[in-house]
Image (cartoon, rainbow over all chains, first blue to last red; front, side, top):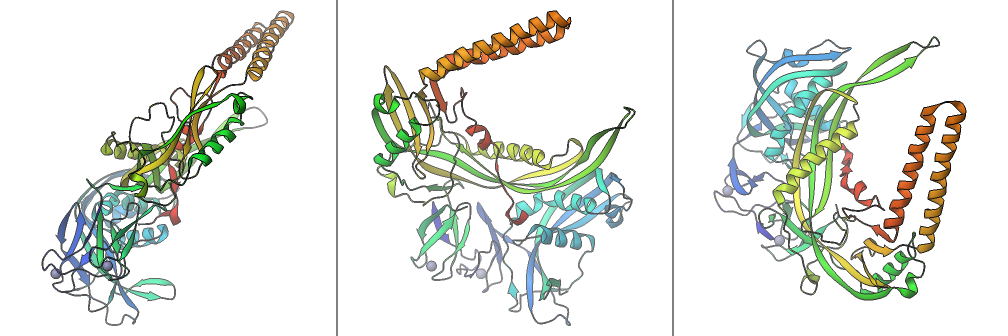
Length: 195
Length: 334
Ligand SMILES: [Zn+2]
Ligand SMILES: [Zn+2]
């Protein structure tokens, strides 16, 4: 077994952190990389805070999955609203969809809340090129695991509506995953969006 | 999960602790972010042997006194050898995420004897981590296939002095087996009797190799040889074979045959008297089953077997461990 110091693959500077973070960000050259067997430099987004956002700001990491999705049939006992159907833009029963998967260490309700909430109501924000010294919450979920959780998010959206899900026939293909840092504000009742 | 292994920071030399399955860590001294990697992607830890010859023999003697083992084992049992070995185990964590939907049927009978079936729709969310351990070499006749204990001090300090068995089974097979087990464990935990829709994904989270100290005790009783294994961390007996007690056997034999005889005879008499042929047949079958059980106990009762043996008749330990340890760590920890 071996232990190595993590260094930026672009400028070779060591990376320091007070917390365990699977997304390795180089403060010198702003390169982000992940490791899984080998090392992989990744593209990532940083969202701009709303000018009115309160002061206790932080960036929360999400894996945003670029997916093709189509719904064929859904049957619910005691319910009627068709959440998934309404979401799809484009073709009548299919189209592209961004699925948001929280990449930090969450508890199950928080995970459901943010994954379903942001996938249903896609966040709108402008991009910036650095973190502007705002705290960056550590990423603990790997890209591979996030991609494998896509189905869970989709079915949760349909199952969480009124009634009891009995049948769901859909097609889902996850093409790619991008690490997205969304602006959040720490408030008295937990996290709130800051975009 | 409490296995951790001590290593040093490659940047400053400070002591660092790695927990099982965790690749990323940070040095508390210099703040470097560090990456830990096992050979071929598998982390390896070894547990420190915390037992000695004396405590192992004490545990074995205590074990001799339990159950229907020969009552003179303590005086007639002769110790032949007692030594520790390291056995390799695979240890995996598999996350299962998904939904299982369907219904449960309940039958209601009203006063007139009409039966109505009620369908209760069910949707169950599945989100758990399951942990499995499995021996990574041929266990031979040791009767140890799973780890009962997964906490203790990790150290390679005893590696020089204790013979170590190499892993011979495939890591990929273990990952695949864990996925299949996690899916079926999750399905049984969801408890939806009639499934109409299911979308469940099994995600392998980590695999590691654990070298675990096990003491082997070989002893004789009369002409025959027996063995026992003792957990080198907890000091508990893991498995073993021991002579059964002759008195218990003969009691079971006579008790068994007379009970089976009575059941068979009673039901024949009752059958003839009442003209109910079926009861007599049932009685005969039950009688035969009791007799069969007695016969088995008599044949194998000369030996008491405990542990994960394939031909095991006397213990259910293996069965309860085959099911994964379910983690409900606040539901979900990533
Ligand atoms: Zn750099
Ligand atoms: Zn250090």
